[in-house]
Amino acid sequence: MTTQTSGVDNLDLFVNAQLQFKQALHWIDGIKEGIIDYLITPKRTIHVRFPVNMDDGSIRTFHGFRVLHNRVRGPGKGGIRYHPDVTSAEVTALAAFMTWKTAVVDLPFGGGKGGIVCNPKELSRSELRRITRRFVAELGDAIGPHTDIPAPDVYTNAQTMAWIYDTYDTMHPGQNNRAVVTGKPLELGGSVGRDEATARGSWYATEELLKLGVVPGLDSLDGATVAVQGYGNAGSIAARLFHDSGAKIIAVSDSRGGICNDDGLDPREVLLHKEQTGSVVGFPGSREISNSDLLVYQCDILIPAALECQITFANASGVKAKLIVEDANGPVTAKADKVLQDKGVIVLPDIVANAGGVVVSYFEWVQNLENQSWDLEKVETRLKKKMDLAVDQTVEKYRALLEKHKGGFNGSQAEPTLRDAALVGAIERIATVVLQRDIWP
Ligand code: NAD
Image (cartoon, rainbow, N blue to C red; front, side, top):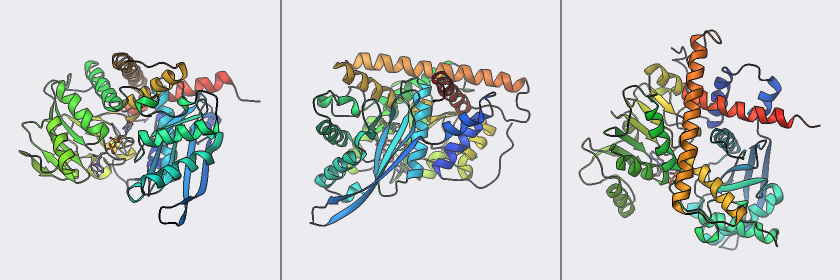
């Protein structure tokens, strides 16, 4: 049992990422202090400020950044978000998650993330295009197919990626530059299956986890009840895939609120309703609930697929699910993790659960470098293989850590979690490569 059941929660994603990392380190012996320092801090953060001509004739200065967290296993990989509140600390945490995630699914990448402080809802398409092009020009050779490879994130999309590619290609003529960015439109070298990849990956991972008997009282999706927070790309597709596997979707939400029906909601019909009305709220035959109610709704599986730091010390004790599948990045705080562990709630951590997105981004990168175009069956088969293996290895590590714990390793240390196991696997993989490459000079 754990001991940390009181205290004030910290809702800073960067602080939580560091707490998770330090927690996992308890399970690793023999790692040099200097290597820990190297792995916990970003390798490089580039800040750029640049002027852009606005449609009304004014000139505005924008602030953008790109964090390359680690690249010992390969080029940096991670999205670029456009948001008025994006900070370099948040992006640093997300870049670190990418380093661990690419290691967990064993991709030849490191971790990166970027952002521009702006409100896309208040910008025209041509303003967004000018902002994107100038940002890429400012980054220069800090991004590249073998350096650091951006992708879409919050409020950036395939069109943004097309502008990034086009700008980079103009700056580097006469070579195949498609692999500089993933999440591109299909016609420009994007991969089939990328849209569904995150949700599909989390579905494969959940099925594999249940098969391995890690979640007490839940061994298959058939008949399992599911609540989903967030009904965008990750949440709505996960709801459909889980439903099609026999699970009953009984509650979902978006930024405007939540709905429930214990007899089951049809995820396709709910999506149609959201497309027509702008929200899941008001879906015929459903009852309205708040987003906070949704997180503590009576269900077998809870899928947070919206924002970070949603399950906190304040509400974790109310969670009734047996399993939480983290489709979002960082939806559970470090303190909430402890409360959930004490309650016996299993958490399939983000760096495993939502890794399907970066796996198919990797497939896109490979196709671009080889001038190939895979079909959907090949993408999905390979994605399943990657996700199943990541879950198998994480569970194997988890069981090994449990044995270590029983054997009295590290004294009063609490039992390990799946998050600890996934992070330990990732850290060991990265540390091994650091030592193999050796410290230069
Ligand atoms: P999205 O923008 O498509 O959807 C987000 C959804 O969350 C929307 O339905 C929105 O209404 C809802 N939402 C916003 N605030 C909310 C709130 N307070 N309560 C409930 N719902 C709220 O985004 P997405 O691509 O589905 O990403 C969701 C999460 O998954 C993010 O944390 C993202 O980092 C993570 N993720 C996504 C991918 C991917 O490939 N899309 C990959 C890895 C991780």
